[in-house]
Each structure stands twice: as C-alpha cells, then as structure tokens.
Image (tube, rainbow over all chains, first blue to last red):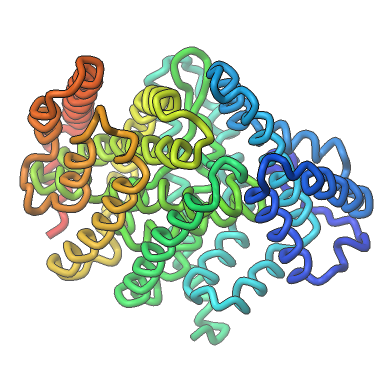
Length: 204
Length: 319
C-alpha cells in the first residue's frame, strides 16, 4: 500500500535492466534527457528513437505498465496545465505539443531508471562524482528514514481521524498542524538516537 | 512548483544550475563549519520529515487541498544554510526517486525553492523578528515570510519559464502569481501553526541550531541575498519592463534588508509609484503592495490570536 501511496516500487523484479551497472543506466538516462531537452523541434527522429528505446526498456524491465501509467498521470498535471495555458495563446499553438512530448519522454526515463536502480547505487555514483559528503550523508539518511516517517505520519493521521469527530475547519487546521509538529519533534528525537547509534558503530 | 524537464531550455538550465551550485556549495560549507556533529543526522531526518509532511494534505477552500513546502519553517527551525541543504536533498530525492521535477530543471527548482524559498524567506523572517520581538513576533514573521517566499518563488518560476520561451510572460506571471498568492496564505498559516506547536512542545528546538555570531550570519544572508537578487535580475527583470521596481523592492527585501531597516513592508509602494508607468502596470503594483500589507496585517492578527499575553514570559526569546 505504501508503494502506491509514495509512488515508488520497493519490490524489485529481477530483470536484465535491473542487473545493468548503475553508472551505465544513469549515463544513458542523462543522455536521453539532455538530448531530448536540447533537441530542436524538427528532430523528430530523435524523439521517436528515444521513445522506442524507452518502450523496449520498459518491456525488458518488467515494470507493471499500469504502475507506469499511474505515475505518469500523477505527475502530469503541471504539464497539462501549461499545455492548456499555451493552447489558449494563439501565438504558441504548435510549441506546447513539443513541450508535452519532451516532458513525457524525460518523465518516463526517470521513472524507468529510478525503479530499476536502488537509490544506494545512485548515491554511490554521486559520491564517485565528488558530490560533497554532507549532502551524501543527508541524502542517505533521508532515503533510509523517508518511508519510516511517511508511515509514522500515516499512523498519526489515522489515529487523529479515528478520534476527532468535529468537522470545523479551524479545528482541522489546528489538529493537522499539531500532527505535523509532533512529526518534527519525533524526527528530531530519532535523529539524536541515530547519532548515538552511529557513534557507537564508529562513525567519524 | 516543481518544473519538469522540457519546460526550460539550455541557457536557463545552465544559469540556474550555476546559481544553485554556488548557493548550495556555500550552504554546505557553512553547515559543515557551524553545525555540531550531533546535529548532522538531523539534516537527513528533517528532509525526510519535509517529504512526509508534503504528503499530509491540508483542506483549502473549495474542497481542494494543498500541502506544505516548508522552506521557511525549516529555515526558522534550523537556520538558512541547513535549510538549503535540507531542501536540496528533498528536491534531489523527489527528482531521482519519484520523477517529481526534472533532472535538467533541478537547478531551477533548487534555486526557486531552496535559495529563494528558504534563504530568501528566512531573510524576511529575521527582519520581521528583528522588528517585532517575542513569540508573537516570531509567529507573525513565520506566517508572513511563508507567504512572501511562496509568491517570490512562483514569480521566479514564471520568469524562468518565460525566459525559456515555454510560456509567454504575462500568462505565466498572472497564472503563477495569482494562484500562489492564495496558496501562500495556506503555507504561511500552516508554517505559523506548526512553528508555534513545536515551540510549545519543545521550546529548545525552535532556537536555531547553527546560530553563529550575528555578524557572520548577516554576511551569510547577504551572500544568499546577492545570489537571489542576481537570479531575479536575470530571470524576472527582462520581462518586468512594466514593473521595473519589483527588482528593487525584492532586492531590498532579500539582500540589503539590514541596511534598509524597517522598510520591508513599506518599500514596494513608493517604488511602484515613482515608476510612473502604464496604468495597468501601476494597478498591478498597487494591488501587489496592498496585498503584501494586508497579508502582513493578517499575520499580525494571527499571531495575536494564537499567542496569549502570558505566554511571552514563559518562553523567553532566543538571546
């Protein structure tokens, strides 16, 4: 359920794509994204071949197509919104199709790469690329505790929903902000414990 | 406000990436220097907290719901440098793990939400705090800065989109600014409520963690302010011909606020009128200034209604 909610697959299907080295996948993904963003409007061949490559990868990676479609639909409101604003402007009628195509290809690339590559591998690639250590530590800890805190927030939300019967708007804002602040207090307490645990295991 | 790939072109991506790299580099250096080792895990946990919080939806008028961005909240709790690191981490994870926001647009997103949203909002927060001491002042400052940072970030976002030629500037500006003027009220209200609740539960957490000597912090803020002003000069100023003093007032708000003293709220109005431009632009400017004043008044009222007189004595402000 949490997969659906957070929008990221945690169950991994073993597939030829998942076994490829992370550096290679990230590299190809970046090349596709760079090429797609920078491609001039008349380079239809590039868009078609990128889309074909992506479709073949999706087929090989055994990512459920329904999941993929759901993710795309979830992420596209802004794209649709801008397309709508542009469609109303007579001067820019042709370009919004291009923008929508470019964004969809890039979105699909990232969804495929991120769902076939564990985040720790991506972090390793970033580390090899000399990204500062503090940022790597922050990213690693964030990824580790992301799902823990999301679950905690969901538990608190459910507990709150089962106890509050009022429908007053002001009261709802109050209780929700209490939930959020409680989450922050718990997160900072957890951070203290994590620091002790890290020190006990010889960090730094 | 996450810009996807394909919406901004190469020159915008490069410019925003450069500005963001400078800002994040500075923030990382500052955080490494001033953050005690004990607090290092808190950055990761705060980032996870922000991500989890963005999944809790708040009811907004008309049956829709919005969620917190939280730049100002984190900046008020952890300080501007730590907040930039935290927001950058959130944006990187959202980009690489959840495909929310583009890879090439990462620079633009970091610039809008971390540098303008968190550090710029923090500057406004500190300025209002300086002016209105006490818990009440802090709550009002968080609310007002939350609104301002949301609006500024959305205007920057519109400027970047227009600079890339994706959307025409008038359409982008009108759509983004008008929507985020409303969203910003929610952001400010939630930030203030959460800030006050944390302050009541754990007063020790609301004092900033890496609070160095005041002079050094001002230097840090001036650096971020210069970066933000530079970005606004590049992205927004070219389009703001009918709106020339926006840059001035924003720069005054973000970068030079310690010189400008108490002008944070009153600054826009004179600048706008001196401009003496077309009627429509003048109307926009007057509306903007009036809106800012109204929101500031609302923030004051909110703080007054939330914080009781007696509470001021129980929680002494940060020295």
